[in-house]
Image (cartoon, rainbow, N blue to C red; front, side, top):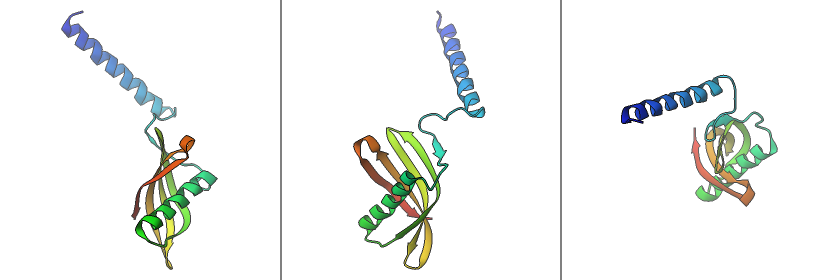
Length: 120
């Protein structure tokens, strides 16, 4: 195979792969690993535990006294474990605010870590 025909083959192969990846998302097939996916049931026990963990860890780290209220919105991402990006309503005294928290979890190891927590 000549260098020119090899380059054309690689280009064609890339186009075919791109076409299949693009068309699979258009017809509702599962997203690729690493895509953020909306959490359908925000009241699911595990989602609630992740959100409460995020508020507790933030309180420990920054010596605050936020009181967890509810999950407003959430997404998850499959990585070597799972990331959860949640919008959490919490009270700071009598004032309620929304916060974005990201929690990384490897459940088979019992590991959870608060990656970020910020007021919106």
